[in-house]
Image (tube, rainbow, N blue to C red; front, side, top):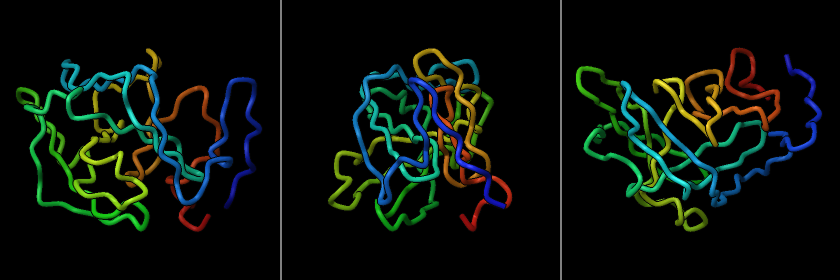
Length: 164
């Protein structure tokens, strides 16, 4: 059952105002990813993907990631807009999260600035932050959106939302 669109307040965005196909935009917001008590990614140069009904996904440039903690896996998925995604397993000391991050080695032409930038599933990390605010993971395990107080929904991804 579709829930009613939440009206954004001052300084907020509604995911229902995001476009389809998705829009990619640079952001200078402070993005951090923590796994097993280590900051494995930190940047002010992320790319933000905005798509109707989805919280933003933040893609971090590889130079701002401790890549020694990421190992490429055989998993791939296909996005009709961005192309073929490849995945990384995250490992810090004795803790591992399989297929917890993804990237586009050869994205479609519209999304070439996204090449090799890495997105992390916030629900599989210890913590993710935007400008110091703890991110809430998008419901479900497919989309990987980052929910903060400046984003309103309802959000696709949870039970019963696939038909939206």
